[in-house]
Image (cartoon, rainbow, N blue to C red; front, top):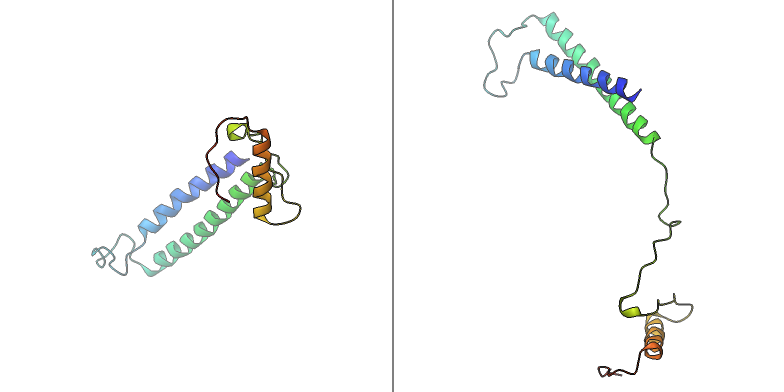
Length: 129
């Protein structure tokens, strides 16, 4: 079904481009305005204007239909429900638990204490207090 709508959409686009190019330039946009154009009668200009409007409506309708058809294949996903793959901590450090009480400084202090307990007896850089 999507292929059929795409083919109809492309046919509308081609005919719409042709209808726009056949219309007489009234503003002289590129300095080519005026003169007796290919279709100079008033009735033909009204026909081209109406044809352009109908084709524009068809273009928008097929565009919306194509986007609706494309959205049928999408499955809604939640970023909250998905658990990320386990990631290794740099240096073998234990993951920090979320704070249950206190602020960020208490959490950092607890994480620092956990690292000191797990760290080997290797020389360490001095820490300020």
